[in-house]
Amino acid sequence: MKYVIIGGVAAGMSAAMEIYRTDETAEITVLERGEDYSYGQCGLPYVIDGVIPELEDVVARRVGTFREKYGMDARTKTEVTNINAKDQIVYGIDLKTGEGFEVPYDKLLIATGSDPIVPDWEGTDLDGIHTLKTLTDTEGIMKDLDESIKHVTIVGGGYIGLEMAESFKTLGKEVTLIQRGKQVAPIFDSDMAELIHEEADRKNIDLKLGESVVGFSGDERVNTVKTDKNEYSTDLVLLAIGVLANTQFLQGTGIHLNPRGAVLVNPYMQTSLKNIYAAGDCATDFHRVKQVNDHIPLGTTSNKQGRIAGANMAGNPLQFKGILGTSIIKFFDLTLGRTGLSEREAKQLNFPYEVQTTKANSHAGYYPGGETLHLKLIYHRDSRKLLGGQIIGKKGVDKRLDVLAMALHHEMTVHDLVDVDLSYAPPYNGVWDPLQQMGRKA
Image (cartoon, rainbow, N blue to C red; front, side):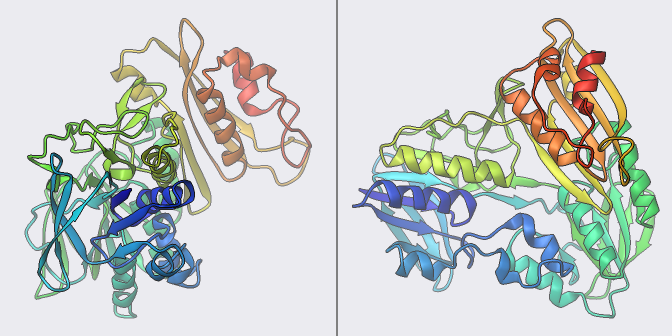
């Protein structure tokens, strides 16, 4: 059986290894546009600020390992340009030589991931303007961050924007963060985002909210960021305004995409075309609370979908059970966590919902060292079924977030929270966990 995988990072190589373990006779070809395989993109901000000592530390396996140990035809600098689904052939260009190639397949996986959005603004081709997605991007930023760089401007206040604001500040840079909307972290409701704004202010991050970047200027290298309201001097720019699924090459193939270009897949990661699968940032995710196909690119989802796609391709039927959009971010001294629906999403989807908010101690009040947790719980007004939640604080956020995600996965109600047998000892919790306190109030 000839397996071809387009994309050699999280989803692609999770699938490749699952095929390798399941089908002993598999012939696996991997076509990767870049130079690097199987690395942890989520760790890149922490390499830049030195928390992770070496870039190599985020690499799970180098391409040579897949070739020599697992016998895969793992290629680099190979860009796929088209797919013939009828004859089951992949076409592409070898970026090292400029020559075209074609590879036949029995089963094909599209795991091309997503690319950072770079708008058609004036001056985006100037030196000193970066995106962060790959090992090569990371090396470029690190080489550019010499002592002459005093001020950095970040465009976008999502995951990468917030994490990199901390990284640049840790390196002693002055940081301005420009966000088109009225808040950073738009996956949080505005009342919770205020806590993030306060932390940014405490750490001397210069937030510019409600401003839209329109271009950049400079003599070969960027020195000015232009918005619809002002101009700001800077030494380096990071564009972190989001990503789009890398699926442009699929135009004309007949494969079904969602409005944002992500490949539509079923629970077996199958696409609308026979023998073609998709997984990771370029594919849709079924949202368990919304009950619709969504697109929330996260590393956890990419690895799960890749494993499931590989198993199905190799004849071991597994189903992807869906997502909740669970995510957690470190932002200086705060941990920011959310799962399920925000209040804004519940309102947009016309869910009849109720909200509980509370401030609680991260552990027993009489035990020293406690920190305040800010919690927000959204649940269905009629069924009392949990819909989502957001938690921000310095300690104990991850513990409650994962409990809430598990409760959402199993469609529990606010009343069910009260009955769960959670761990308790004064250094870790009170006798009533904050989530259970909220369940009792509800």
